[in-house]
Length: 274
Image (spheres, one colour):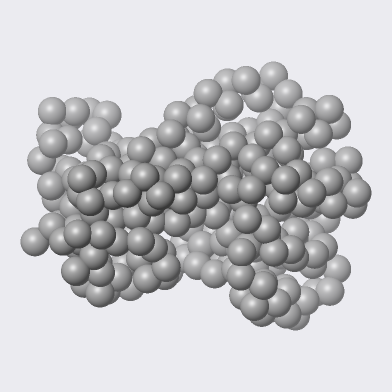
């Protein structure tokens, strides 16, 4: 897909991976529609995209992806610009850390609302128009290294990211006859504020600063953004980002018996256990 002039929708675009992705697509000539729950961050992003080129910014909107009505209204506004989006990046995500026993049902509702229902909403409200237009397109759903290999003390997060991976693989088969690619993006450690902005409980909550520090040593978000650009062009089923994610993905396929040991290693890497 040549991105010049294409309409690209990015959720959770106010910071981190979403911000880097919106800017990357704008730099490739795409028109960007971005949403986030933080209007201040969106305003800053809009200014940055406008510097790339005023024509590269379609609009930004404050939207909670977990809210069905808000996502429906957002999609309607997008489709007033064009019959369909060319690329949809379902990136918005949050984190919960803590043992299963320490994770409340309110935390489960909050996390699944954004990480899973937000992706479902992005697919539900944008894919039908993409199919009806009949000109193809691409959907990028952000899963995680923890959607490939589970680890203790992040059960809720793993559940959401494994679900995004499964949803993406199923959708990929369904959308192929329509010329629409679907890729699950699985980053490893990335330097974002997901831990600072997340909900940590129990022993993990007591070590929140340590976990956040581990993430701050991760790869730059632009690494993920560049992987997304490449995924639109090459249409892989799963795209890992970072050597840690690549290695885990390879090992879980060729040596599944080592996954329990890898889980402990990943947990330590993410600072979830001592």
